[in-house]
Amino acid sequence: MLANCPAWPRPDLGGGLGSCMDTNQAMPGLQMLMLVALVQVLCVVPAAALTDFPSKFLVGEVNGQVVVTCDSAQEQVSWKQNEHQEIMAEHHIAGRTLTLEGLDQPATGNYTCWHGPRLLDSTYVVVSDPDYPLLQGAPGSAVTCRAESYGGELSCSWTALRPAAFRARLSRSPDGAPGAWLYVGGGSALQGPDQPQTFTATLADGTFCPFAEEPRPLELVLEGISAESFVNITHRLFLRDIVRPGPPQDVTAQSKGGLLHLSWAPPASWSSPHSYFLLRYQLEYEHWDGTKGSLQLEGVTEMSIEGDVRWVQIRCQDPLVNSTWSPWTTWQNV
Ligand SMILES: *[C@@H]1O[C@H](CO)[C@@H](O)[C@H](O)[C@H]1NC(C)=O
Ligand SMILES: *[C@@H]1O[C@H](CO)[C@@H](O)[C@H](O)[C@H]1NC(C)=O
Ligand SMILES: *[C@@H]1O[C@H](CO)[C@@H](O)[C@H](O)[C@H]1NC(C)=O
Picture 1 (cartoon, rainbow, N blue to C red):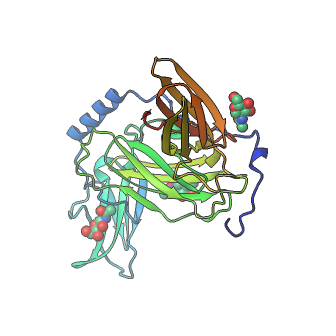
Picture 2: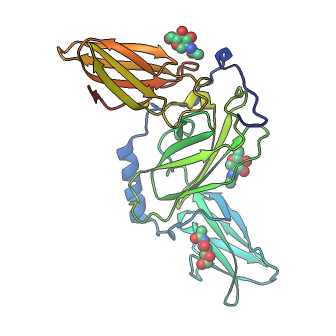
């Protein structure tokens, strides 16, 4: 067991299971969104493709203003937008600041400040327009996460409705130091402007103790930038609510004297020791005469079944939290 990681009597966990995922949320009319995306391509000056999540960015609203500051010791600087001298927005320059006003889509882009030929600084400005949502689904359900164990690693997915760059990180609320940003997406020449794309990121909470009670939720922060929008989602979740074991492994089946002897092992990704992280197994089998049977077992990894069994499959769940069942193993021929 890990240092500073006191064992906690798992069977006492009860109640208080917050809900963190609504995977079946209704989606906005996709066709409508695609139509909007198409129209937008036809009438908006294309912004410079966002190849990476910008290290420095500002988010403005339609008709709003932003003040871009050139981080430099130079008193007088010149500005470019997407490599062009001409700035596609109402603006004024005072010393090291560039104020953009009456923001509109053409104002989006990479603003660079220069001293003669020397690049001093760059800031990506995005004009966030609520008419062009970036993520599929409502903010509360746009991100779904799964964990295959209590090891602190989770896999989160979301779907972008337009080309975008993302970054995500985990922390343990309220006082946990946030982990490092994980950068996802961007530079996707493959994604057409009207083609939703699903991203998956694997994030780990290094401080997580698999043996401890989980009194505070994990906090996932996801930020995304496209040419038309910025999203910033904070998603709180408990591992116990999103855990779903992988399928059992090493299934063996041997027929002997009218008995089928089966054995299997917990999924490789499941938390150990297995005597502490007990699993519940469900077996389904079919006899040669077509009759079927099923049974449920806890904590054991072998079993004998009477009769001429033809096929068998097994899946598992964490009985302590009634987790989602694992996928089935493939049907095993006997
Ligand atoms: C903006 O342009 C500068 C200079 O070409 C470049 O170094 C920087 O990576 C660009 N930023 C973005 C977000 O594309
Ligand atoms: C995103 O939201 C978090 C939490 O509300 C906030 O602390 C952070 O500053 C926001 N990031 C940006 C870039 O607005
Ligand atoms: C799990 O499900 C069983 C049977 O449906 C129920 O008796 C038990 O209370 C549930 N346990 C939890 C932790 O929800």
